[in-house]
Length: 320
Image (cartoon, rainbow, N blue to C red; front, side, top):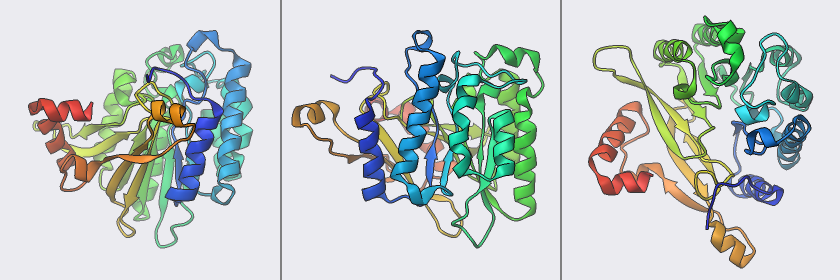
């Protein structure tokens, strides 16, 4: 029976090996939450060690992807959980940050050490500017007590995001956003401003990826008009944990020219069968276009899917 548990090291290693040998990704996105989810029963040393070990495993599995790996950390990667002091950072995270240096340049790393966020060019794409912006969502976490001291723009996160997007737009580029905590769990003022940013730069944001919930799902970002027109999709991938069901990972295919997503797959394995057989068999658990009868992966199509889920109990159960 699948229950809410954090994975052993061997399960994460299997996910890395499958991704490397079968998926063969062009870039790797890691959205955080690596430390145990037993909250305050853990320790600062355990949180830092887990983050270090996870980083090392990714780098060892993908030694040729040091410039194609993009990461952010989760609320459980901080100690105490959910806390980020905007003056000093979080010691558990900062003690592990040095291992992330191969994934960014010196200037980006200096910014990352101070703030927990950075932006880095996708170097394998030569024809145009494409940058991944890694957002520190502890800047908006409603459980982070330090946000109450900086109500306007905690940690200067939104200001940084807007400046990066403005520069990308100026250079006719495209952006991929990676975060951990979904906006619904951020402070309301921050979430409202973030929504406005997504609307303003909808034409250059190609993917908006999250973790945190441990479930394979989506949220729509909407315009601030009367119709609340969908302008973007916030996609959440399940995790290697079993908090949201069987362990899973996500694969996105994008158009080579536009970088618009053209396919979304969720790979998973049956934990009970793996325990019985002694081996893991990864399969496509969800082909979003096929299984949900979607025309494409545009905001409009996701809105249509949301309406169909609301109206159809069978489809809602499938989605759940």
